[in-house]
Length: 181
Image (cartoon, rainbow, N blue to C red; front, side, top):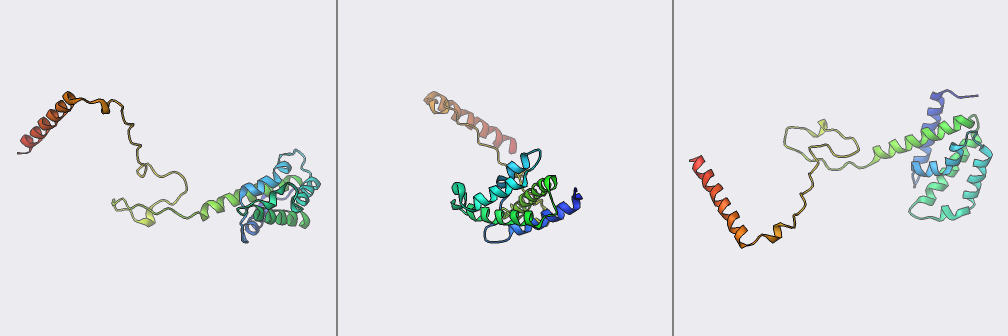
């Protein structure tokens, strides 16, 4: 029996909250890595997913021994996925939706939890409360154009060329001086 989308979303929010709590919050890719085969099957096999979770829990493949908190994330994700499976009430396609929505929530919450870069005050009267605080590339006014590439010809300017440049500089300075007075 298919659950209403609102019920699946509610369960996804609870699962995402449990995955985010603890010493090593589970990232979206860890969750999706565990359930990817399950999600890609036309007819999802819950028994196969349970076997996979058991094997990982027993240390098969050495995934849990990986460093940088990955093993902790896996242990937490395995525990919570097993909890969802043991609670029952949700099957097949609904489980796929649950995992998909949970992964999306993990991604969104992770993006919202990122520390914000310091804001640059442009001096145009914009107050910090009025500026946009969205993740992503900086706004166009904050972007700095890349410096132009250095031409190899500049290094080959001879004495004659330098004297011509100096003369042009003097002429421009004279024009500016005459134009201002």
